[in-house]
Image (cartoon, rainbow, N blue to C red; front, side):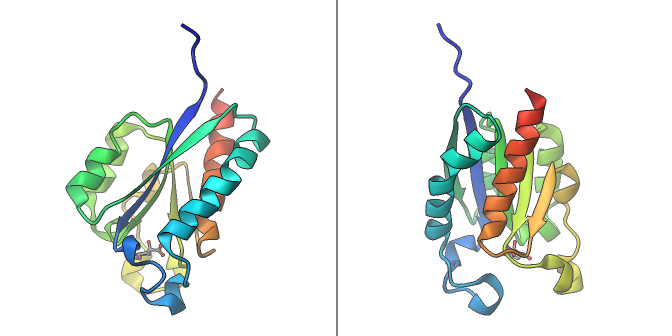
Length: 156
Ligand code: DQA
């Protein structure tokens, strides 16, 4: 059987990101999560090609349930773009899972967490990421995916 080189990439958004568009738009913008997903779907073939990846499929996921979110990360992805929301700053469980899984991921945040409250300036998950991208609104997801593809391309 021919081996496929198609990458399967999870784009996972955590707690409260289902509220994007109506949640504190002055901080997170007015773009909804489904619009962000559409933007990624549209640019994905161009990005994958630009980094020499034969093909990459994006699978989108959002959950407000931490346990379900953690289990989703274990489904054998080639890489992930993850916005953990508030779990970024609170969840040792997420950090431990990411450390254990060895899943290459880009951590992304819409807002510039470096210039927000002190409790948002620490990420438990970031040390396990390939890279982190924040402050660009919905474009943080695109930039994170781009960085992840650059990293994946270097591995092959
Ligand atoms: C966020 C930043 C977090 O501090 C916050 O709890 C979120 C969204 C962002 O995308 O800017 O829910 O991850």
